[in-house]
Image (cartoon, rainbow, N blue to C red):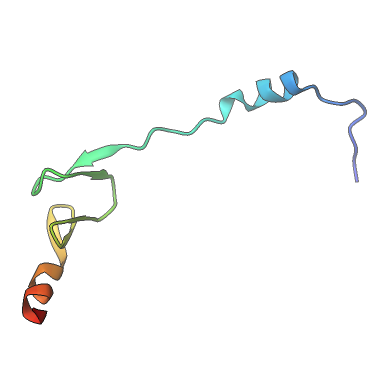
Length: 67
């Protein structure tokens, strides 16, 4: 297994790592509800699961039926 001949200083190591940055997540606004959410992700709003402006799951109906 290869070993370094010299110790890499903390400054030199950190200079190399300056390019590894967390990117800012892109936020979208739902056309139906106006709710802010991540792109390509479904989101809950008032008991309904929305994706691309359409309802996928409607839990508000099941809660009314159970009560």
